[in-house]
Amino acid sequence: MGAVAAFFVAQAVEWRTAYFIGGGMGLSLLLLRLKVLDSGLFHQTAARTDVLRGSLLQLFRTRERSMRYLRSVLIGLPTWFVIGILVSFSREFAVHLGITEAIDPGRGILYAYAAISAGDILIGLLSQALKSRKKALYVFYAITALGMLRFFTASTANELYWACGIMGFGTGFWALFVTVGAENFGTNLRATAATTIPNMVRGSLNLISALFLWLTAKAGYLEGGILTAVIVFAVTLWAAAGLAETFGRDLDFVEKD
Image 1 (cartoon, rainbow, N blue to C red):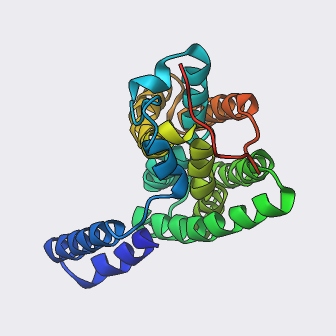
Image 2: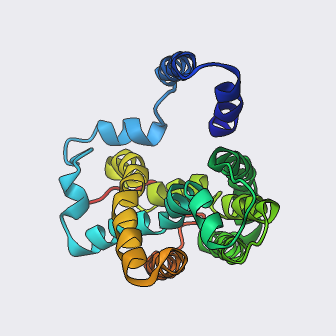
């Protein structure tokens, strides 16, 4: 909801003031986090001397663990492709779609993030109802794909904004995606995995952007966007298919060499 609030803050104050508001909230969040208690499982593992904790290199110690980590990252690719490419460049896509109305990417981000907030709540409920993390992810992948289809066939500004909202709702699996990353690793590496996996996905936007630029140079702007979407989804589905179901898993385990 921060991105939604930021849209309205940006309309009300100049950018320097907006930075002070955001920075103050960030420092407040830091203070709140200092009060969060560690889990009993963590304290139990921390007391052991035979377990190596928090090592990033340990995530790549074995091929199986490396692939588990890689797949945990790749299942989150659609989130930043949607926001970083489709929604952020909605004005440019509108031109190539033949939409003559003015498009405000900030408004597209507003609709997308409002929908993401709702999706993040509902996917958790859906996962509980289905008793599956992966089935819930597949449902939201399908919603994202439908949103992309609407995006690439939009003929008016309203249709494009609606598509941003649908894609946003579909990519509202961030909370569940991070949960899957945490549940895939033992207590000694769980925090390391759960904090680095989301940032790896954010960083992947650089590679996705490079792919998008290369494809647009080869095939055209709209076609490059469609091809990038197909490739991103193919990689994501491959990654999801290879991950174990983690719903209901006993998290009292550690990763060993």
